[in-house]
Amino acid sequence: MDYKITLNSNEVPKKWYNINADLPVELPMPKNSEGNDQISSLQKAFTKVGLEQEFSTERFIKIPKDVRKLYMQMGRPSPLFRATKLEEYLDTPAKIYYKREDTSPTGSHKLNSAIPQAYFAKKEGIERLTTETGAGQWGTALSLACNLLDLECTVYMVKVSFQQKPDRKSIMNIYNGNVFASPSENTKVGREILAQNPNHPGSLGVAISEAMEEALENEKVKYTLGSVLNHVMLHQTIIGQELKKQLEIAGEEPDIMIACAGGGSNFAGSLFPFIKDKIADKSDTQFIAVEPSACPTLTKGSYEYDFGDVNGFTPMLKMFTLGHDFVAPSVHAGGLRYHGMSPQVSLLTKEGYIEPRSAHQRDVFEAGITFARNEGVLPAPETTHAIKVAIDEALKCKQTGEEKTIVMNFSGHGMLDLKGYASYFEGSMPNSK
Ligand SMILES: *Cc1c(COP(=O)(O)O)cnc(C)c1O
Image (cartoon, rainbow, N blue to C red; front, side, top):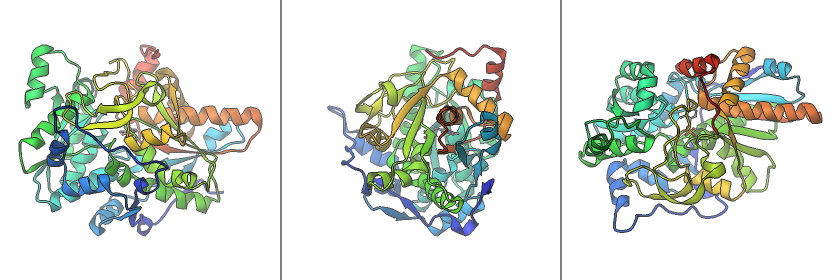
């Protein structure tokens, strides 16, 4: 038995997988809200290639040679581990595998999309990229990607995260990113929000509005998004394609596959290449997306058109949403705070291919600690949601005696999220309702 299944550098996939080609029903297009033209703004804010990929229906899209090289230089393919110590601890007949996106230099899967986005911008003559970041991982990945491709990078970081996570700001600075707490004084929207409420905690929606405003007002500046949109899901599919190969090497056919879901990108990236087979009726794997009960987009939201941001700068997307003015409670330390969800992940959930589940904050941190104590690796708070469900499913197998194969995407490490773990140990972490 292999404890660890690795691939060589040259086994990094040569193409991204585009699920638009295989969706069971057509994906509803973004639309303008009445009397507005956000679609034109979006076209101005994004790179050309990003937009092309957003609406492409080609099944496989070639990864440019230089992007593939950067993937390799940054350590891809990522390894697949078997969680044997955790299996022993749980005393389960189930097998648990985890795909290690935490081995990326920035600690999460986000670099998989940051690299191609920076690459395409550079090719189009852009000088600076802007973005928003919630917990900090996207801003960190984009800062590094921009630096590798000789671009400037401006990051709007949700104010509560900025205050709770000063280390995140430092790491972005190390990678040469400029970081501002959002709402900020840099932009019109930021100034308006601060005028109304100087203590506004910020939200991903507000940060998106600020980053987009900059791109709309300067030709050499483009806006990027680290999740939600189709082209981001596309870039992340290198995870799932590698994973497929690795599971073949291990001789495994997964019964259950699990990933956490904030905007949907690590879920989509790791699982779309497998969901493809389910759509084609060639697999009966169960796919579970896990979200916090404090931000229950897929489990309690409604499937309808809504803005991607708080100010209505973005077009309306058909997705599961809690409403674009939703702000997760600030005691929630588990990440995954976005009000909406990838339209592709939303559609596949609506159509019954994906089962959504929610988990409480204390329970996921407990699962994360159990994982760390057995496997050694400390998961990001987001990742602990997937772990919680993997453990639940493994314990069900213990009761039924089933030897299921459970595979989860380990989206990132938690070495910069120690404050969240500290509040768990202090007992100051409330359970979300
Ligand atoms: C950003 C992030 C997530 C959530 O975003 P998705 O787009 O849903 O993947 C999950 N885990 C980690 C470690 C992240 O950095």
